[in-house]
Length: 101
Image 1 (tube, rainbow, N blue to C red):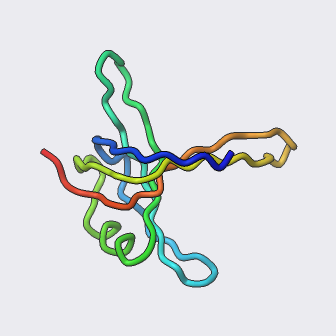
Image 2 (tube, rainbow, N blue to C red):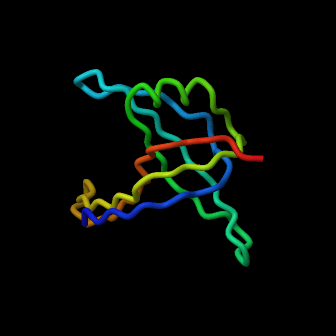
Image 3 (tube, rainbow, N blue to C red):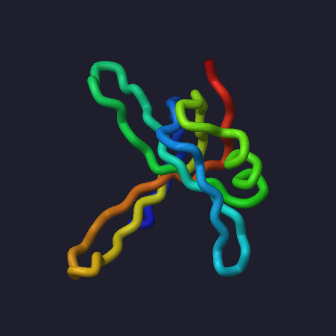
C-alpha cells in the first residue's frame, strides 16, 4: 500500500513537533495537525513528518496550536502488529510548511 498523492492541509498543531534522528543521523520531525472540515463537528487529524534541515528548523519554531498549512504527499503503509494483525498507517511527508492566519 505505497500509494502517494499530493495534498495541502490547513490546520492547527496538536502538539509541539519533536525532532528525532535516524540511525544514519538524518533529522526528521513529527507532529499531528487538526484540520477543521466543513460540516464535521470533530477535527480530522493528520500525522505529519518532515525531513532534513527543514525538520530541524520547523521543530524549533512551531508550537502546539500554531495555525499552519502543510503541503506534501500522503503515504500509506501496511504493517503487522505484535499480535500478527495487519494494520494500515497513513502520514503526510511534508515538502513545505507555512504560517496561516
